Image (cartoon, rainbow, N blue to C red):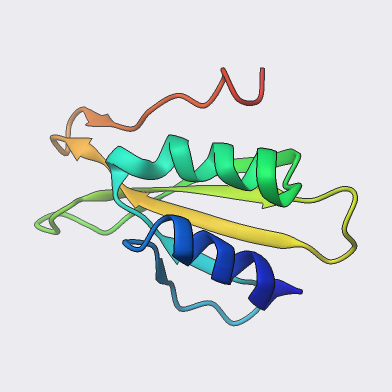
Length: 105
C-alpha cells in the first residue's frame, strides 16, 4: 500500500524524491510545492491527521540551514504514515515555511 500512494504522489509531483528513512516512507519536496503535496495527501490519499510538524537544524553553514518536516497519518488506512520534508527559505535567523493551518485547522 505504501508503494501505491507514493507512486500517485510522484506521478502528480515529479519533484518529490525519496528521503532516507529506516522506519516509514518519507519524501523531500520543494518548499513551493509543500502545501499542494500535503493537500493531495490529505484529500486524495486519506492522510487525514497531521501528527506533528518538526524541523531539522543542519547546523551553522548549511544551506539551507533548516528543513521543516510534516508527519502525516491516515486514520482510515491502517499503517499509513508518511513524512514530508521541505527546505525552509529565509535566513538562519528567520527561517520561513508555509502554514498548513488552512488544511488542518
